[in-house]
Length: 252
Length: 252
Image 1 (cartoon, one colour):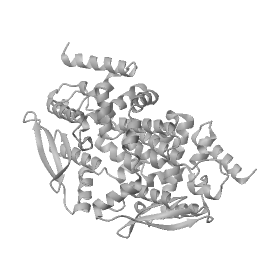
Image 2 (cartoon, chains in turn brown, blue; image 1 turned 90 degrees about the horizontal axis):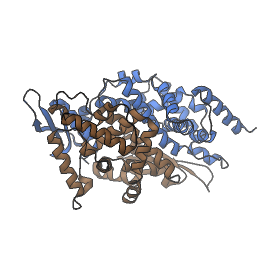
Image 3 (cartoon, chains in turn blue, brown; image 1 turned 60 degrees about the vertical axis):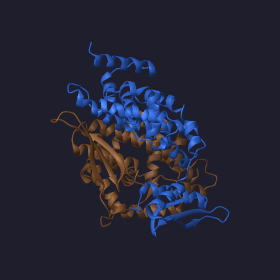
Image 4 (cartoon, chains in turn blue, red; image 1 turned 90 degrees about the vertical axis):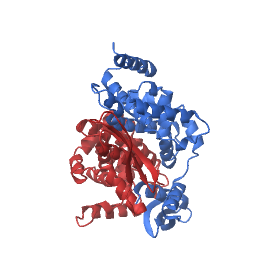
């Protein structure tokens, strides 16, 4: 049996044990493990590279992680849940997840790309390196593609359970590390970088009785309105305005 | 029966017919229909506003729309599917979807907010107005919250079917309108806006035999590398580099 056939069997066996599933359509998993660079060195390889599965798996991961923290943190507002989800599934976290799954051992990838992945992993283990500066999409993309394959082969419920089993080991670390930076400071930093000045917040409407006013706030840069938000306090309304500004990027 | 109780019954009846479902937990739907502004005028209202459900429903919509176009367009690469998904579920499209569901008639919302929604809808129907300039999150957020409620009450499969039944009426219009602008031109525009210059692409690696070279390209602005990409042609590698640059925004 050719060594590639052997590697394929090993991968299926490993994932069936690792995720406690019986794989129906092995092709999904071989595609998820195929990096585009591999097709160059293996013309007869019958599977596509994993980029379409990565597209699908990214959304499987989004819903699974959203469902997870929605129920795990019933007291977190949308304004806290959204950055938490972003930090939980960014490319660095996904690389760590890929590593925790030993995905690097099962990828079909060119020798050149394999070397850059190994270099990335050695830097990741080097505590003197600022990991936020590290960039490597191969593992992050592959882990998303793998989630896409599980979704196609086993359905959403199984995929969600697999993903939540993984994320629950990372979530508290993520909450600690980014003590939930608020939208206002994110927008402030962005505007400082782009325009060397802070955005300007103004109350444009306030409804309701004095003891409980409902505020609408406008945020602008260079006198151009870039976001609107409302809430029970000026602070909440400003947060919402900053969030909408970051969503729309109308300063461009 | 109070008029609010009457409106609640009407809403449940309407959504059960509209989506052909038997609603189990009505509370999910009342929460999805509750705009934060409504709580001000109705202190005894027993439901939260819809922002947490919006957070969840946004991800339900992401996976449902991804699954839909993944299977509907088997020949679309990830580089085409990603902007298509973004255009299919942006806030303007979601407002149109909310309108197609008559969601504006069932929202629990303050008089002030209701007026701005009605103004938005009249502009939306005014063909002389450039709709890409219109901004109104109330309806877009509510429709996402509604999808979140359907997901919680009926599970992912039912939510996906409901969403796909809606999206299939919009997708071809979306594909025509944005004839799939590529990542390179998006990055080019962004760099022109921010730095008044175009990004610079360079081949940093080329592997494989002359007749089929695998390229790695670096894209940089002001001599700072902001993205890497690879592919079978320089053009593909440049597209990937632009895509990664847009993903990471390392120019900041």
